[in-house]
Image 1 (tube, rainbow, N blue to C red):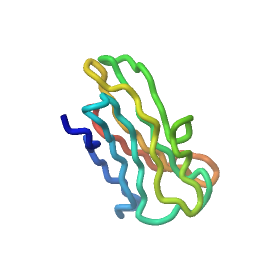
Image 2: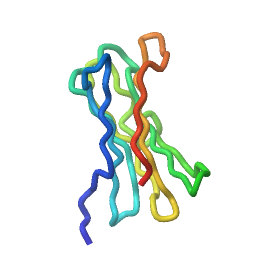
Image 3: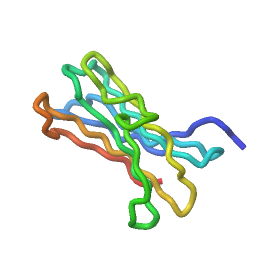
Image 4: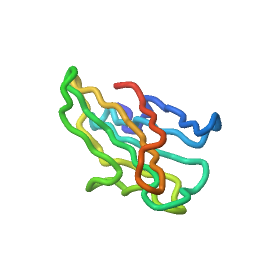
Length: 119
């Protein structure tokens, strides 16, 4: 069995019609896990700029979640940074995970969001 990580889906993020980055739902068929990755093409202009969450579902019921800001993740994207990873979640049938990215204004309001499908 292949032990290399896979990218289940990539969703591009746009601001005013310009592609500024992407969110990915990544996983391992070998380990039966999923995690999120958020990448920007330019460095964050201020602290607490963005985060990504991964939610795991059993049908329509949320079973678990993680984010860059939670233990095991690489923390919020702060000024000067371009990316973050979440911790891994168990993701074996019947569970389905999805990744959700949020970009926030300097005052903390959500201004852009994007998410992948469930895998």
